[in-house]
Image (cartoon, rainbow, N blue to C red; front, side, top):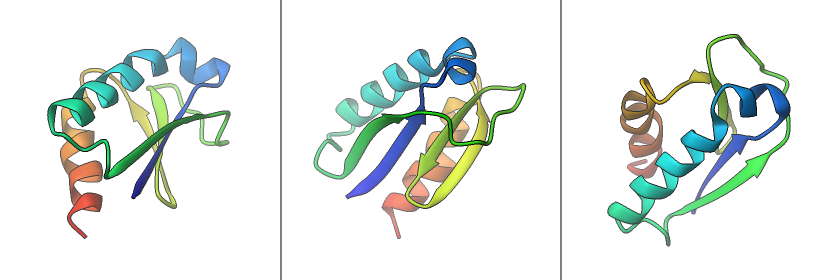
Length: 84
């Protein structure tokens, strides 16, 4: 099971973490990955930046994700991790 954690702390919330969660839920459902991905929220990961939301995938923490960069994030981080 691939663990994906979206920061929902105040900084990431203001940068759109709710929308990133919705996009993740949508992609997971559309691709029938509910049994392969565990999606959860987390509080501050200590990696805040000005650009966007912080997301953890397994033991890696990625920063700066927005609605506009979500597709690239999904393909480069989530799909890659699923295919390992």
